[in-house]
Length: 469
Ligand SMILES: *Cc1c(COP(=O)(O)O)cnc(C)c1O
Image (cartoon, rainbow, N blue to C red; front, side):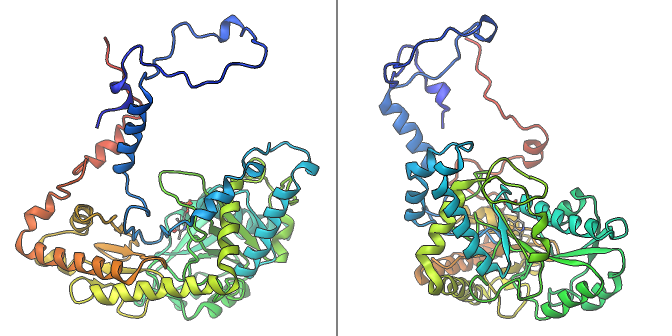
C-alpha cells in the first residue's frame, strides 16, 4: 500500500479550515520556517479511501478474534466511547479552576470508590499512564513506607517469581531495588519453600500476579502474603489483568497492600500501538500518605505524571463499571473463565495445555513436544493463524513454558467463535504434520510476511524519507 505522501499530487490541496476570526499576529522571524512543509495534497475522496484502506489492514477486536493472553483485548462497548467524547470531558483544560471541574472530579472520585471496592483497597490514584508506570508508582509507595519507618536502608530486595511479567523485575530495578527471583513450583504457583528461603530483614516486598501468568490461581495466596508480612515486607499485586477475579475475590482480602490495574485491559479501553492507558493504583490505608500529589485527588507523595493522568480512560472505565454494575462485573469475570476453559478443552488433544487443570481467564499451550514431532514452532503456528483472520496469541511468554502460546479469549466471545477458533487450531495441527514447510513460510495472505525482526529492532526506519524530485 502506498503512503499518503506518495499519493499526493501538487495542487490538489484541500482547504477545510474555517475563515480566521481572530486578529492575525506576525510571528517573530526566527520562528518562521524557510521552506513550506511538504504536506500531502489529496482530494477528500482519496483521503477517505486512504484511511479506509489502512483500516482494512489493521486487526482489532472489532475485526475478529484476538486472544492475546495477558493483554485482555476485550470488546470496548460503544457507550464507553460516547461518554468519553462528551464535550464537558474533552474540552476541559487541566489548569481550569476547581469550581469549573467539579464534574471531572466526581468522575475520578466515583471511579476511585468503585475500584477500591473491586480491589479491596482504601484509596486510589489515576496518575500512572500505563501498567508498568502503575507498578513503578506502587513500588514507590512501598519504598516511602519503609523509609518513613527508618527501615529503607536495610530493606533492599524485592522478590519476584520467575513467572512474572517482565515489567515486574524492571520496575523493582528502576525503584533502586535488588531483584530476587524465585522459581515456580511444578504446578506454576509460588514455591513456598523457595519463598521462605529468601525472606528476611532485607525484604522490602513481593510482586505477584494472581491468577499468575500461566492462568492459575495460587491456592496458597493467604499463606504467601502472611509470610511476607511476617518478614516485615509488603505485598504488591500486579492486577494488570483482573478479568478472572473482578467482583469475585479482592486482592486486598488476599493480603496485598497495594495494586495496579490496567484500566486499558480489565476495564475495556482498547489498547495496543501505545495508545493512552491508565494504570490505576490502589492501596491500603497505611500507604495512603505516600500517594502521588494531585490537584484533583489530593495526595502528598511523589508526583509521577502531570495533572490527573489519562482522564478519558478513567471515564471509559467508569462507564464500563457502571453499565455492568454489581452483578455484571462478576458475571463478566466468570464468563471470561468459562470461555478460557471451554477453548482450552476444545483445543486439547491437538495442542496440549502446559498445566492440565482448570484455568482462570487464560491458559498456556506447550508446543515443545509438537515442535519436536513436526519441526513447526509456536511462532510458525502464530504466523499461520494470521491467514485465518485470527490475531496470534501471546508467544514465548511466560518464560517458564517452552514454545508457549498463551490464549485469553475474553468474556464477550460467543460459543461459535470459540468453536471456530478450536477448529482452526485443529486444522493447523494437521497441516503441520502434512506440510510443515508451508507453515514455516506463513502468513501467505497478509500484507507483510515475515519481517526481519532483528533488523527492524536494531535499525528501525521511523521516518518517511521523501524521494528527491
Ligand atoms: C500488560 C501487563 C503489564 C504492563 O502494562 P502496560 O500498560 O503495558 O505497561 C504488567 N503486568 C502484567 C501482568 C501485564 O499483563
